[in-house]
Image 1: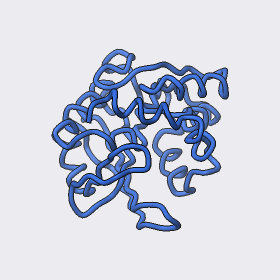
Image 2: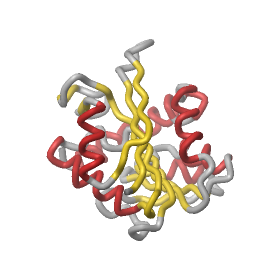
Image 3: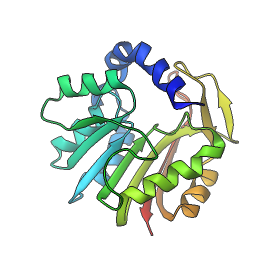
Length: 200
C-alpha cells in the first residue's frame, strides 16, 4: 500500500486516534514491561519509528532514555509536539526516517510496519537495522497470525504475520531474536506479537 494512502487515512482520524490510544495508561502492562526491559535502560539515542501521538516516546523519556519520535503523519507529530513539548518529534518515514545510519542504541517500531505490504517488509527491516549501532536493540510489535494475510484494519488495510516468519526476516536483515511475546485476542483486541532483536 502506498505511504500516501496510509498517511491520509491516519491524518483523517488523528485526533480521535490520539484520544483513544495516545496514552501509556491505555497500553497493556505486559507491553510496557517488555519495552521497558529492553529499551528503558539504554545509553544513547533511541528512535520511536512511527511514534504516532508520541506517548511511547514520552514514556521512554520519563525513564531517562534519550528518546525521540518520527512519524509520517503530520497531525500526529503536531499533537506530539504540543502534548510533550520537551520531546523531539519529526515528520519522517522509512527508508530514511532522519537519523544517520548506525546512530541509534535502540529502535522501537510498535505496530509501525503493519501496513507494509509483504514484499516491502524485508527492505523496511533492513532500514531499521541500518539505524542501529552494532548490538543495538529493536523492539517490534505487530498483529499475530497463523499466516501472512491482509485484513481490514479500522483505519486502513493491515497485515498479520506469524512470529516465526517475522523472526526469519529479521535474521535476513542482520537482527538476531532475543525475546518474543504473544498474546491471544482479548477484550476486542486482535492477537498480538512482539519480537526483540539485536543488531548482529
